[in-house]
Amino acid sequence: MALNRKVAYIDLTSGKIETSPISVDMRKKYIGSRGLDAYLLYNHLKPGVDALGPDNVAIISAGLLVGTPASASCRVHVCAKSPLTNFYGSCNGGGFFTPEMRWAGFDHLVIKGKAEKPVYLWINNDQGLYDVAQECGSYEDFVDYIGEFMTQTPDGVKFNDPAVNAIELNADVFDF
Image (tube, rainbow, N blue to C red; front, top):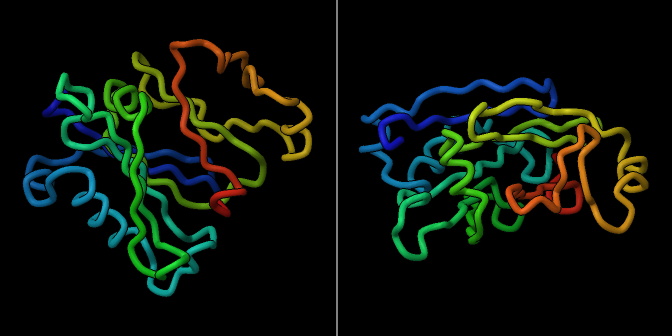
């Protein structure tokens, strides 16, 4: 796994995903998730982009020791152009999402664009990345569909399944 790390480039506007390996040279130059995230953000962000616009890029990544037995290493790092500073914005959190993402073969998700309707991205250990930008209907239909508690996707994936870990970005947080 350590020698087989990948980045997934997810375009919500077109619904396309491209993946590419992370070379050993890149991993040596930009150690860990924050270093490589800064590099990816610098190279994928156009000058003068509105931090709250669809041209901003959000990068979700796993730290260097995520998915290993190292204590307190299951951290997720998210970076984008900050609307507060109009510069590099960075935050992190804990949980099970990034170990699952790494075990599925991805270290970084570079997300750009704006989907017309609510979408989800499914990452599965044995199949990698698929069902990109699966339409869930209009936002109002989606809210009606989930009611008070979201229990499953239109494809039947149950979110109350303890084997499913999720991270959510939505219009209330980011205007993708």
